Amino acid sequence: MHYKLNLKLLNLEMIKKGYSINQLSKESGVGKATISRLTREKVVSRPSTIYKIAKALEINVEEILEEIE
Image (cartoon, rainbow, N blue to C red; front, top):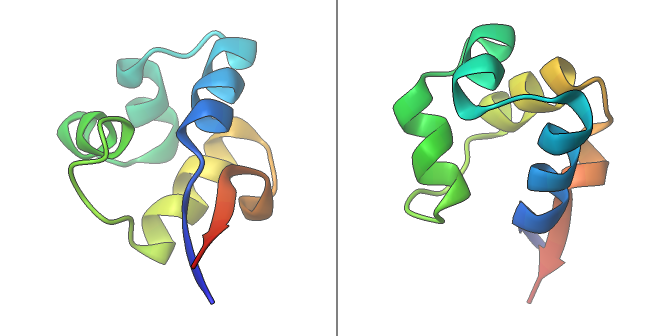
């Protein structure tokens, strides 16, 4: 099985927390450019990056992942 970020859910969680890319970067320790590229599907997410983002949003990793074929 392969997984990718569910960008709709990621953006929804960012809105719920009131986070911009800059704020999520500060809270997660992930660079602004990396988060920006992730939200535009320009890069594949590392598991450690997804974990940091989920932790900053106070959600489980599984909540922002979707299975792909």
